Image (cartoon, rainbow, N blue to C red; front, side, top):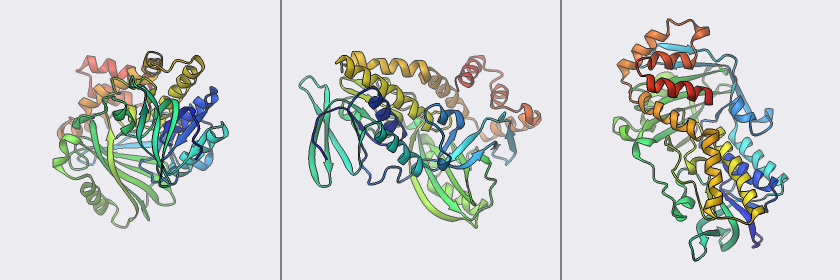
Length: 394
């Protein structure tokens, strides 16, 4: 690896990191993208679901990424009542993250970004005033120090980069989901339909999902709220569900880890540093989905980084323009979703069953998520306003 000085170093080559690198380079910044694993896009730690709009807002769709096209969604109550949701022909996809992430890094390379795998960043370089000025990394057994004007941390929920820079990155236990997922083969699932199970027996304080990937494959996983893990280990609950619902399944991969369903960090910038994606807590607090919001945050951060390089101002006072842009584009909506999440995932099984019994009588063509939320929050006008604004924002 060349030990030269860069304008921007991005740590982490997921969708958020690659979009940050792409847009920094488009803005004229000499950019380095570092990934600690040997392969970009592997291992996959994601349910791989994303909306059509959430994907195509940031990149041109490549059919190679698509494992299945989703047109229908079914919500399943604790008593097993199935509630099909009207999607109004708004498509979503289950994508192949191995191909998708790899291709995003290739797009970055085409923009002139230098991409390097097996580059394990273990600390930051700092000036005497504490400003971030580069990274320290282990590359193929060699300790290197690489200087830059700006570092973008796209290193996931743990975000050591943010912590090393002095940002408060801790997540409250109630805002963390303990998740587990199997990719399974040999099961009969509708390739155009996703399933969501709610209730204490499925996933306390969260939900369980079945995301088809075509050819009798599916991602089946669940998230348990951090405060309620005493009600069951995520892997144990998932194994139980698979045994009861898909006993014929063969498990091809197993992943487990934490997903932050929190508010965006109060500070996502400091002198010489910006955080994006999971590191900044941009994951949708209700769904736990982070691909689209991560890409948005990466795009905004890359653009601001390039502007800062051009102006020669890497101070927090300038980089905070990224925080302002995030707040305007999605941050306020993120706060609304968080408030709604706080209510939804505290509903009892009895309340969920009652809601299902009410909305099942609504004609399917009118049974939108907005209509379901209206039924749920009809006696809570403050939350109804949040719902209306949040749905509009999505």
